[in-house]
Length: 128
Image 1 (cartoon, rainbow, N blue to C red):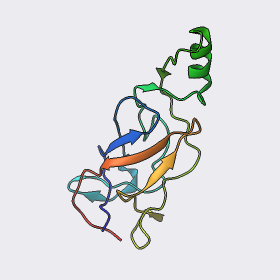
Image 2 (cartoon, one colour; image 1 turned 45 degrees about the horizontal axis):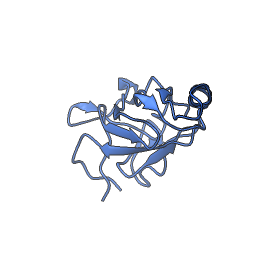
Image 3 (cartoon, rainbow, N blue to C red; image 1 turned 90 degrees about the horizontal axis):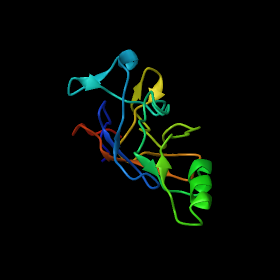
């Protein structure tokens, strides 16, 4: 059974070189283990999803440009996530502030081809 995701959950991007964390603003109004609980709508870059250190995909124009300048040697550049859609799938039964609760098996995508996943939801609370 998937776990509920809370503020401070650990994240990983397939194209990032460092782990990141999820920030859940207290506006959702629901806590688990005394931390704000996340919804699938907590996907905003910088506000909810912090950068993943350096980005290594050539789909990122900054990486492509730096790599071209280095004569084809992959040159990672600072990560700036570009996320256009909510986390999926989220909970099918539990809602928070009228949105599906975010579960530990959810993922979202960065426009630069990165797949972002939750490596530690921050709590042991089970949800469906």
